[in-house]
Amino acid sequence: METPTADSPAEPDISHINPAAEEVWFGHPRQLARLFTTEAWERFGYYGMRALLTLYLTKHFLFSDQTTNGLYGGFTALVYLTPLIGGLIADRYLGSKKSVKFGALVMSAGYFLLCFGGPTATPYAKIDGQRYEVQVATVGDTETQYVIDHGHRLAVKGQDDGSVTLTDATGAVPARTIAKGGFVPGADRSAFYTLLTLLSLSLITIGNGFFKPNISTIVGNLYAMGDRRRDAGFTIFYMGINLGSLFSQILCPYLATAYGWWVGFLLAAIGMLISFALIQFDGGKLDGYGEPPAGQAKDRSLLIYLGALIAVPIAFFLFWNMMNYVKPPSGSGIIGYVAALPIMGKALFLTFLISIPGVLIWSWKVGSKVEFEMMLASIVMVVFNVVFWTLFEQAGSSLTLFADRNTDLSVFGLFTMSAGQTQFFNAFFIVALAPLFSIMWNGLAKRGLEPSTPIKFGIALIGVGAGFLVLVFGSRFAGPDFKVSVWWLALLYLIHSAAELCISPVGLSMISKLSIARIVGMMMGVWFLSISCAQYVAGVVAQVASVETVGGQVTNLQVSLNTYSGVFWTIGLVAAGIGVVLLAISPFVRKWMNGVQ
Image (tube, rainbow, N blue to C red; front, side):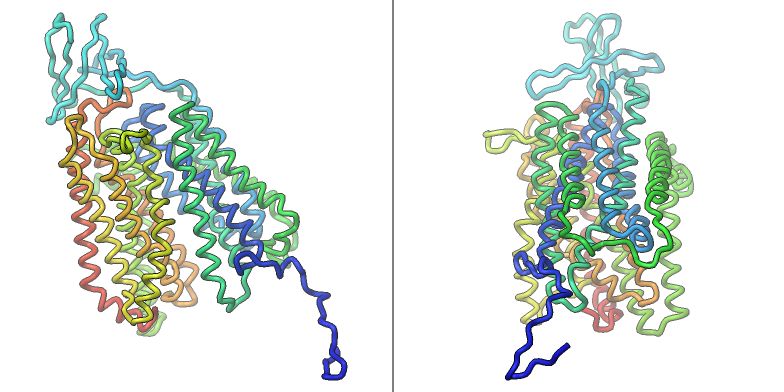
């Protein structure tokens, strides 16, 4: 290349520059806008479906709370577990872009299949071993369950001690009290459509494994090493997650309530297809980003696609196993409880319990004292991270059922929300609070007052506990219908969202900084494994809050309110207490971090 001089300035050499690469969007590579929109539509589909899932299982298929919460917890656990494999496959063989497109198609297929739920399950009850038909009558907002006994409609009323009372409004049949355990609700549901729903969840989890980790990888590829715009770019990108979930958690539940479950799921599927189209038909704007690794002898794409579809029956089997889980009898002890866990529960807990001490032992043997201390600090935060997400993720299970059963969803008397729409509070508060938290942390950092990461984790745990305690306090003001104002639930989500902003943005970054370089990839896996375990345990916690239902409806709202309040009070106190413990040991953890910020 000719060197320019003052006398003869040379023309710039642009033969190797792609002019499109120089286009910017808010100071960032133009491609970020497409990836931002892609992520927003994918999250639109996922969170729209998630807002409906628990209610769909309890109201359409009439599953018990225990079965519903177990399936929901297992599903969200797999959603966080499969990206570990999907990311590895993309890095070594498929490339991020092909992985994202394949994952989007598989997920959209899962959402479409959810549209086919068949007829609503038919409730029945077994009383002392004899089967009776059950009818559910709705008058205004009040639903009453009736057992049909020789042509007589007997109203079902659950009691505090677990017994059930049957009463006849005409007085022709004397009231009857059935001892605890003698009244067993059930439902006749289509085996075909039940299995189709499990297949849908299986497709979504496998597709998510290909999509979730790799869309972020493409975003990272937009920036050269050392580009200071990277963190800001990811902040913009992640805002797409909350914007997508915000709108879908309003629209999908509304459509499901107004026109049927299938319409809500259809909108989620359409959102997912839009996400696919944005990558598939990019007009060459993403050429060179997320491509398969160079130097491969042959294209293994078709083989990987077939392998992923073969993995669907494995996920299906795990869901089927969770659906048929039977709680062990009381007095079984911890060994009996673990032995009775579904296969997925055993695998998650065993892997987590082995990996945590295993990583520490390995670090102590091969690392320096400083490296071991840093790994110890990272493991401490991994463990506390499990506690936080276990309680935070009650949003899609026990808190949604609480919204449906014991919450007055009227908004200033102008309109009534649906239970599924209450999940939008979290996304709304994240969008509203994130800029404020960013300003706050930056302001504190300039003054040298920004809390350390362990302290932020401790504040987050106290916050998630405080949210539940506030809701329990609000339950004291429940009306005669045993329903709490929706604003108490909104306050819980406000506190939980603030807590999330203390832990979510810093966790993964800290793990990457504290881990020994040789095993940083494995530590990332342990981090996501911890979140997966938290999702599963969240389902277990929600099962503790299970309320007996007949025909998908609670038989005693007072018992329901007391049950939820008792569980929320306990987990609120435990979370806050664990947060205080972390604050107390934070000086030691910060010391182990050896100056890492």
